[in-house]
Image (cartoon, rainbow, N blue to C red; front, side, top):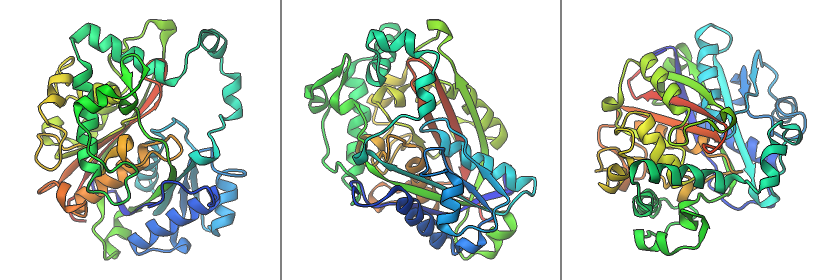
Length: 385
């Protein structure tokens, strides 16, 4: 895939609490921001992707609202927080086969307005077997954390190191919601939400959004902008298997392996990684599943300071991630890609900029690692067009 499709524009909305801004307006603002970053306009867009939670009739409403009248390719894939990684991969594939040449991917969320579940969710076949017993998203992740502790001796203090690294990065991000650095002790002293996960083990939820512009090689060559190559992409889904699932791994085992193969690289080649951090255990399992450390060794790996940017052995979530910076509408995949683009362009905040950052991996998680989930993986490169 290298050399066929590029990320030309990236924009993250600076707001974190925007009750007065409509969802449609948020989509418009991030779309215009990403196109301006690329040096393009709405009139150039011939592909448009977003999730089904877009307002009105989804892409139909948004295309009309934005005045996109040249669309020949659309996609509304829904895999939760990992959906936008799937969108970028699908955009790259559509460009590769000649369906389109300038693809806009937008994301907007309004946590301040509540998070109504899609109507189809209420028809989910698993609800009658899970909801009556009190399950919800945090306890499901807590199950995974407790199992990882039981299998491998992982400790709550090691999980807390993920939050500590994120907080150290966020203090340099003027737009981050939580900019105060915290210690392991402060994480462990925060209220218990679902044993063993404390309040500071859990992500924030915000308003906001972001957008990316994916373009063909020909368009990339015409732009006066550092365009980022999409080198590899894959998605995967992992079911609950009636409870017979291994809670210590995620679908990233499959998506990561395929993305590495497509890109022709391996874990040792990655200079920067953006990992979905809905909870600290989510990061720990992805580190293992993507081959950055052995299975069961994620605890000692994060305890070593590996995640700290720019000098750790694997700088991760240098903007503060979903634990401290931004998690718009409870979907964190888009900000991870935007920060990876910044790192590869050498445009991250100077205090966290990775030196000679050439290859980045971004991994998203949707659903719950305690039940059923989807994963999307991207490998990006800074090489010139």
